[in-house]
Image 1 (cartoon, rainbow, N blue to C red):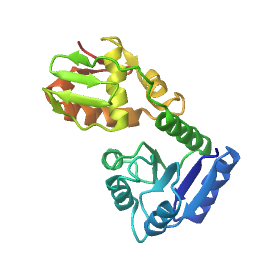
Image 2: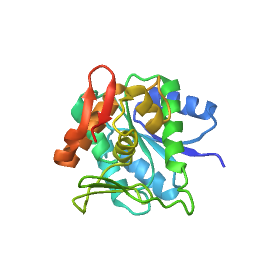
Image 3: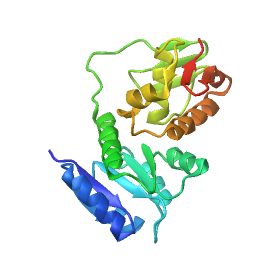
Length: 229
């Protein structure tokens, strides 16, 4: 079945460019010029993913993302945020709102398509049937891979899907270095088209959420990260 992407972008030239490249890649597209129109179209026909510009008239991208993530029927729709803002605080806001990826303008259409494909691949990966595994235990930290849950001192830690995947990649490496390229490949599904700042932003938030345990995520300057056991 052809997957449908809702493109929410108020600039016609950019909207048309995204539509062209997504349809060439085999996707079906729907278009919206502002947040209100996008919300109405989501209710009419659920997309498989939303490409969402943050700076929109009527209802901006942040407000639309909050609204979609608060509703049971729409909270699982993957969101790729697209914006001219490049400051770290804007990336953090986007990811905290539940974005699955963040792409600053100007962007490469090929990179955009690859990132969308990677997000859809992650979102569509079925959980193995009958493959329940015992939670990983590192001190007070417990990682339940089967149920996508993390607990610290038996209390749940709310992580985004990407934060959970990054933590799992690092912990499973058992103290070995994970380069940025290997993390991009393992979590996003691509390497050379990744943005190392995206990893840095996610890991910064992950460290904060894990408190003292987050200090075990060690930065190896110029190379990558490792989780100290």
